[in-house]
Amino acid sequence: MNGSLAAAQPAHAGLSRALVALLAFCCGAIVANIYYAQPIVGLIAPDLGLSTERASLIVSLTQLGYALGLLLLVPLADLVENRRLMIITAVLACVSLLLAGTSSNGQGQIFLAYALLIGFSSVAVQMLIPLAAHLAPEQQRGRVVGNIMGGLLLGILLARPLSSLIADHFGWRSVFIGAAALMLAIVVLLALSLPRRVPEHRASYAGLMLSLIALLRQYPVLRQRSLYQALMFAAFSLYWTAAPLALASEYGLSQSQIALFALVGAVGAIAAPIAGRLADAGHARAGSLVALLLAPLSLLLGLTSPGYTVIGLGLTGVLLDFAVQMNMVIGQREVYALHPASRGRLNALYMTSIFLGGAVGSALASGLYALHGWQGVALVGAALPGAALVVFLLVSRRT
Image (cartoon, rainbow, N blue to C red; front, side, top):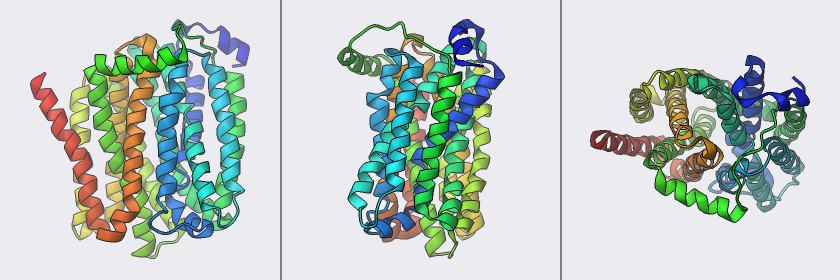
């Protein structure tokens, strides 16, 4: 599909399978930018002069930058022509990745600034998903969003093993340079294939930002779903930042072996399309209950002897990924249904809260592991989705 044909396609025509697949690929490739550093902070930090305790700041600042981009850039999808906005942010991501990949030894502070910029500029993915929801017919919206989220979540899960393998054989800088080249290809794909969409909403940028507060006040479901997923994603980021440290220090795994470990977690990506179908069938609450129960239980496995083996940690990763992804997709569908004309802003609020949670989880990881070992990681990690479960049960009982 070329750019003119895509632009001419009316919203009610929906999305072809080819375009859904393309959007899923683009989402996965873009969101991977904020996860490449996660398993290789142990290589990056000493090279750039960062201490072990500060190593997880690389991941945390990337996620914080992503949260800022979600809050400040993604709402523009309700105001500015979507394709142009996504291309501009993707170009900025390409430049920031290239700067990170060409950092010199000892430039730790500068690299942290690049990490923040990488996260800030990798938010086009959260403009693509509301666009797909806008184009999809109501009866297929959960399935379309679930399929695209499957691509996004595969990008999250495959970024870690890919990063470890490349860093092990070609050095960590090659990871960021390769990602910059991939982003350049994504820019071309978006320009050629993405449908144009000019939003109907008319307001100033200041008015748009103020409307975020109004939306947050207006919709309890938005506040609830944002809280649940922020706590879930904090546990997810805590686990996936601490696990490579434990595997390298306690089990002596190489970066390539850690890559294979992280690859196992990609099995959890099957949750996204399953969750979309459950939501379409009216089982959103039951699906969320399963996810919120599964997440803390998976982390508590690490307190047992079988659970704190390489296989046990891998099982925790699969179950945790499955739970986090299922709850994310169900929550996203419910949030999108609140007010179709505000999907860009609703998505911005929902995803900002999630990645603020992720930034907190990542920031805790290296210090928590250094002070309390994996037992501390497992307990804190289980407490986070456990709190979400308690709130979910209280809300369900009240409603």
